[in-house]
Length: 424
Image (cartoon, rainbow, N blue to C red; front, side, top):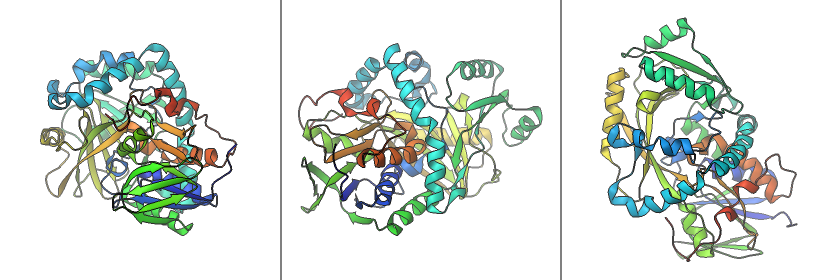
């Protein structure tokens, strides 16, 4: 058994990295976060704010594969496979297909179910520790449909799906009438999910987590990690030629994580799964309204403390590819059709979710290099699973009894990298 390290470096300052850094610092380890910039534009903060405890079924599934044709962007859906980036997404898609067998799907669902069962209590503990419990709201979310046919199909799907600790119910007539007053199209049906939640202000969340980390004595080093080495201790080489050392380094750099691990012979087949949002600070949307999924439009609308955000799209593309402005245009068109008022002071965002082919995160420690641990690849569930990931990483590194079995999330499930320095 490895001794708990006295010093740690966390590479990455997204919500997963911050949660892990706080967990390590609280256990008495002198922890330094290494990141090249402030975190406010990343996927940790550009998401819909939804604590998605209902999403226990991995998107690597036979059902998801069958649904691809009708979900393509060219047919009005949210899935984009840019032809010019086929060299990026085709190898990933082939791995996704192999991960979508019924047996692997069942194993993945069991692993996600266990993690998501702890997600909400972990967030409650973490936010209580920061002194900002009000940043988490536990009043569920809504899914609505605009046609009788889609409502019937949608209800049937969700009632047949495994939704973990969440529950659902039909929205009563009086509440449905209130929803109808918010939008122009007729709402044909709606479900209310319980035991899911929302972060009320992503920027305030980031500030609270950073403040707590620094209050515990954590330090920050501005720089980009470009290479790792070490077995019983770890070295981090930076892009400015500098070097940092610690007893342990945790790679929590989101979509940039694979580039650090692949040269070590570790297979981490990440892809940048890009999402888009538009946001306005001038809105009449009710402040207490939970997130609403407009399922016919593959779009989620969330009322935050600072305004209204509409988010969508799953775009498998190169990380350095310029944003596709058609995505923002479609979001604006949906917002206009719904009457959401995205006219003035509207901002646009695009960010990359770090996604692995089986739609499970990577959480663990390298077997042959115990000074290097990792926590990344949380796909759409980065915000949802950040707090429980922090607790699990802290327990793993300090040899504590863990509430979460991390073996399904080990990178060893992908074998060794075929060649050093390659990554999709």
